[in-house]
Length: 268
Image 1: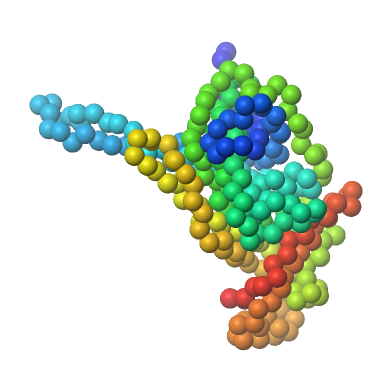
Image 2: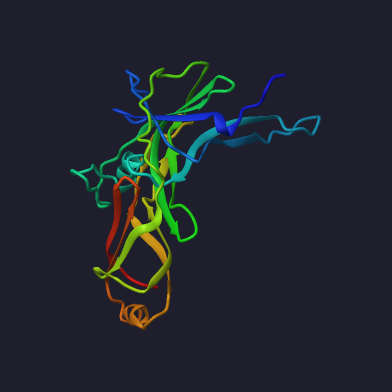
């Protein structure tokens, strides 16, 4: 019996592009750790409305191609560094990356459906939005929504037969972590999440159906922190429109840490 593709057999690989939207000449791809991945090519339908004797549609053509990708997984040290830098539009400096950059970084992704031998190649993939969610009743999760140039190829063999493996560190969650408000621990926090939105847009030009560029807008950071009320600190700062700092640090059994620092926030 011919089997259908299983999501549990997907291998997702990526490589930084030297030129946006072009598959690297020398494949040197790395495995991307994920819990789920969805790549889609949404094509504009253009219907010929010419009147026909049969009353049927004369023809349908496909216009602009809107390529998107959504990735999600569990936070783990070393597994997401390059995508975190991409959403910050910046490069790592030693062990830190800030979200105020304008360094555009794109990837070629390959979705390997290893059980049926189908390898989809997507080019010009850039991170548009990023969300981290850290509850007290589960693992800390990440999600990345991306825009891309196009689905470039579908192959029967992978671009790179020797993928660089994932870091393989253990998933992180709240235990052992610390949340600081204005530099010090405060209240009893029951959940925290943060989103960065780069405002990416696909730009189409005459002559090509695929996007000819991705342009970024302002970087916007939002989030939610849920706490048990022990005093009026949050209400006072909210009413006074005080700029406050919030940071939280995650750790794993090996002692690796990841810190998310938001130095200027206003409470809603």
